[in-house]
Length: 234
Image (tube, rainbow, N blue to C red; front, side, top):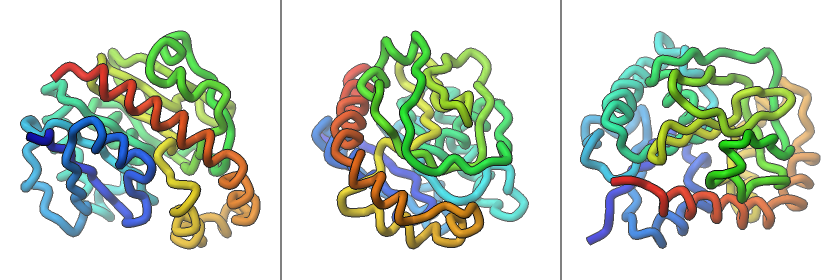
């Protein structure tokens, strides 16, 4: 019997990308739940084998404008309290940090583009070691504080908190190792056109970066995810 995996999706083009075949190869049947469209009460926050909270262009703190975030935070709070396997990517990691009681706020600068991570000693010993020296995709203007009791795993000059873990089952990543830069990246450039224009970031440069770093990121990100999934305690 397949294990159950639910991907919480906030915008359609920020999907599981290159992570989807890795998750399926690990024995999971994946179901997308579109936040704000599909009812979150259909997700069992504890019995579901794996939850992946994906990225999106809104802020954790915008609950008055987007009240559905409150429902997502409640779901994650219940799941994380039970120590169940949960992965967060960008907004998803920020949501996890907030559900664990940490502050999330704007940094005042957009970190959008490709650059490598500086791994902490804990990061270099765990699944993120596969990403060492690999330029990863960054696309955010917010940052989470580290939840109490978590381990910091990575940083960049513009963002001191790029990844955290709480035991083997909880991993939050501020960056995007899952983005399909070979076939899906144009959707990102079009979908985030207004943000790129507002930040004076050239889509042509991002497209060139995707072509340059896509293969390495796909291989490293897939290896990282497979390593993390194999280490889960269920």
